[in-house]
Amino acid sequence: MKRFNIILRSYKSGFTLTELLIVVIIIGIVSTLALPMLVKTIEKAKLGEAVSNLNLIRTGEKIYFLEYGFFSGKDGADKQAGIVKLNIEDPNSANANFTYTIETEKGETGDFTARAQRKDTAPNPYSTYYYEISKDGKISSEPAGNPLKP
Image 1: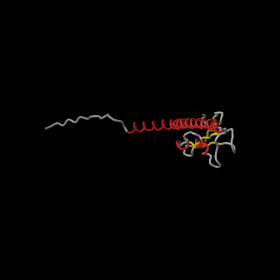
Image 2: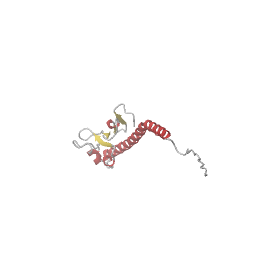
Image 3: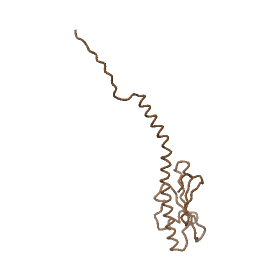
């Protein structure tokens, strides 16, 4: 008669389902905590882009003023026409995050305000924010509770 030796082996290579579930839950909690900070960081980078383009518009306005003796402004209802008059790359054609406009008084004027309005594609509450620069270079933001100050 033959004897059958049964050797019981315990296989301990790998993870149990419970261990995997705990890891997935921990990763979910950490990512939930980190996501708002990621969105805020992305919005700050976009704010840097807006500030850079507003300074570009201000420089273009200063050059335009030296040539013509007044700042370029809007033509009628077209608020973006003033940017086209400047000898700069139009930030509205190269940008998907903000809409840039120039506000002046009617007629030839010695003052201007350029505005970067966040487009509707931004997450709340960032879609309501806008940033302005005047001829003296001061950048302001609205609404007053804006957490992303330039």
